[in-house]
Picture (cartoon, rainbow, N blue to C red):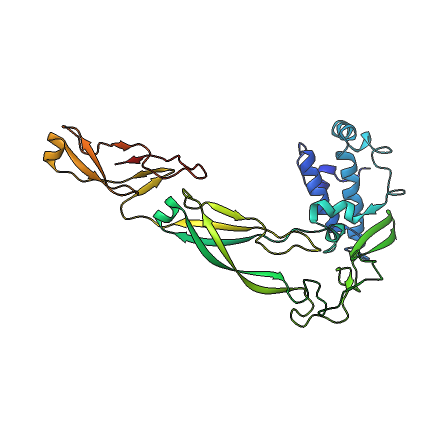
Length: 328
């Protein structure tokens, strides 16, 4: 018992670590030292046992309380009874955290959504203010239009892999000093796809996908701001195993205007006037995004004074008919 390391030290966490911190550290260390990843490594095997022993105690509130109060003496004989009947499945251990074990795991058998794409679009100030339609070309990976994504030669259908029965995974069971250890790995016969292709498509070399350029018409709404992200659903890349397409995100960048500035939906500009106009008052021409507007300023107007034209700013995004103000 005197030779045992402190359980918190084993997991590399502070005594007040949260349950989430314990779980995260445990998963990292358990994967690092797992016997399947370190075959024949006795030191890794010992570390794996030590990590599991520490986590079994610290993840249980009552055992952790006893350990914090009495140390190893408080949990020996009850805190961790060994691995005699403890079956460890690596997919259960790592699946939700690492997305599967060994590059595959059960998660790879499910339909997976395709990757999202991002496109940068530069707009003039007025295009962002009033909206615009743009034709764009997006380079992306898409399903091969000759084999429809199957990877097989036209008119042929891939066969279900007889070794993994279409799951793409093969299970192995290994007996260790901790008990039976179950793990899943990509099927070596089909490479994890679950399908066998005897005659690959010559257009995509059996991949089922090709690089392509897709032309899209994009409607930019009035009032879009610099740095805003617009989305086009389903215009990303195709998913795995029949999963849905990802989305295309359009990142908007608005070029500055020589006269107007913008803050949200409000616009600003400076209007120079003469001393006489300021002193006596006058009707002046004020530039706005809709064109010049005549405005009467009162006598005694001071330098730097600000006036507001209600509703002469930029349309609020996705709120037709509602506009900000123009300040000058």
